[in-house]
Image (tube, rainbow, N blue to C red; front, side):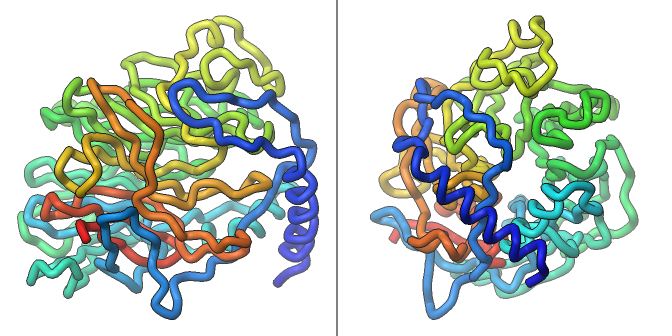
Length: 429
């Protein structure tokens, strides 16, 4: 362990312990969350468990009536999943390739992220996994495409495959049943890399549009708004024309996206800002309106002003309040719609992969959760589908949930675990 890493562990532990004394006793959750007043942190809380992995037969804990098994293992930081029409499962394997740290806080943050394998050399590939005998375990693995730039989101429309690299969307020709792509692909849209680097993709129900999440460079536009241009937004790409535009903005880091089928409305999960407390503000799940502005960096949870940021009253005035709070710093990344009948005991709703916090005194997230929906809106408290990713003393991370999707059989969930290097499969017990 280097000197910076050791110093970060010691100082970060002391700061986290001190802040835990006055930490909120409840999570800011639901449609009407109790959000504590902001407490500016001179030194940001840095608390990260060590990446430990799954050993000695340990498995995630399932909700009653469910069971879990490893669909695929031995991956290199699996982040996102796409299931093809023929049942092949694609997995994006990548991690943040952080630039040189500029400040002492950058050094500390990098040391914290290395503890859980969140930064480092990226595999920069998509692998294809095939379960030929239908037993819920993939027998074959192929390299679908490699030498990419931090690949993440994936989408297929007909015989065209789209890949969300950190610096843009690339298009490839795809032959149904093929186990790999050929050629270098064609760049359709360019995005600014670095910062919040993931580029999730979602196809519209009529397959005419692709939506892409592009996160901010920094926490609260620390380097000014000019470098944030085109970021903290969901983009819309018109497939036929190739034209791209910002669909909604003020979303600090919108990652997973999904369609609510009854209303046809786009939903996303968003990671909110740091440095104001354990539960302030909460990450959130929200419907997304065309042209909507959701507050970042000027304000949060509607019109609560963040006075660390140079203000723009007109932007604050039009900020939309999110639909559903998910707790502070849960790092809610994965999102998919779960139709009634997919898993026993779970009706219609959204499934969310919570990657877990690194920046609060008592860790949060580290779960796969379900939010019930009724009449197109969240209708109750969240429920755990998978838990047990974090040790009781918060020192070890056995795994960290990321992307989630419905399995090829329509009766299971697949979830990427980028610490366990596993794709988990959840089914009826």
